[in-house]
Length: 291
Ligand code: FE2
Image (cartoon, rainbow, N blue to C red; front, side, top):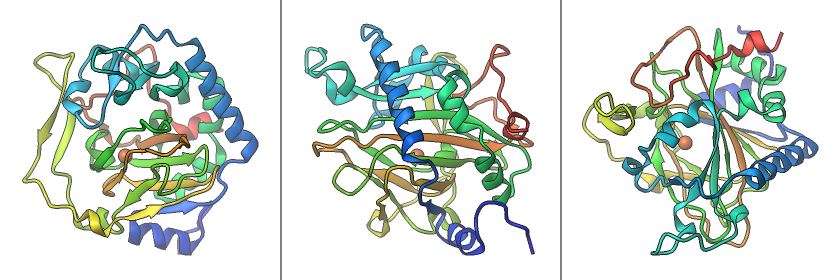
């Protein structure tokens, strides 16, 4: 019998069956508020003339250098619907940003402190990781009225190791529900579906990305998806092969979340992954950072 450090047996079993698990109050309200303030300060300091529209509707278009370089930076991406047909921003900056990514956990003191924790180390051990590595972090705003659709996907398609080892840690920075665009997931989809495509750096142009088809597309029955409504501070653990998505946010409330993705550091990080770190900022091992 395995000795669990963070989860209990029921939680681990539920995660194994569903491919996701909600853990209430992973972060305190005080910690969440300090991260929200930190994210607001980043946007305040952001020069909005440095525009890169981030759209998950049209992933092919995400292929600019700004996106590729964000793997080792703190970069801001706009909501597609924040612009009018003339390409002008139609709302104030604080409500026009889709997300901040992708190295908050390594570059920002507050996010770093909240990412490299004993609790996460214990949790990843319960999930059988020997040497977990946080490869990316994102602060997602899901802005009121214009928060964009995130189509059904598996996170492992974006962060590939051989074998697959991606896990998402999604932490609610405010209450998320069906009205403001909470996560939806197809229970058990991680067990029955395979990874059919990968999002990769295009080796021909080196500054673009594309999807590489691995096998024939499968039909995911999104009618079987369930909403994951959570409270501020709650965590959702997402298996890398779990099919999940979220609808547009057309409500008056935002739906902020801080999301980290981890992989097994003992497995090979694929050279085709869009996210590559230079020698200036190598990936860090969680267990070494949290002594
Ligand atoms: Fe995802």
